[in-house]
Length: 152
Image (cartoon, rainbow, N blue to C red; front, side):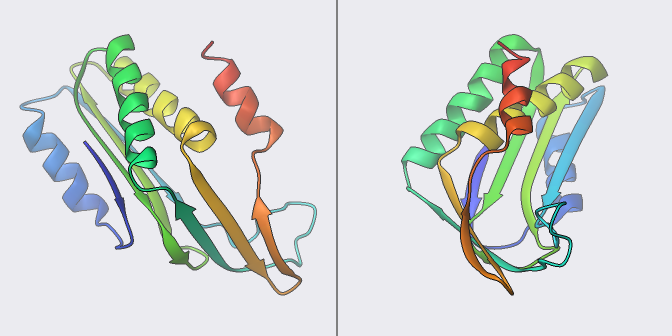
């Protein structure tokens, strides 16, 4: 199940909903991403004031569903939950939640990492970061691209 939303989410509620809807899983793995206060390690004095996320409704949900289906085709999953926020966010705000339930921990861990790697690189979100030095659009890093290449 996926959700693209402006509103924050409650990790405990999302975990419990996944646990109940998965009907007695053996493992649940969750990942929560936060807006970084310092995006660029080389510019530690360049503090993030806000991050604005845009998306193309319909296209975004379609791509997230495809990523979720790809994970389901690779591992035995009992349930999934993907939440990605859009709009204006501040440093330390929750931005993404990925939850995966399975009978076995290995499938849950691998599927959660797979979903997050592909979401980070292939989901159509555009991120504009505001710092004290100005505004800039964020593009994929080499490490993000390397993360999805290991799955191919």
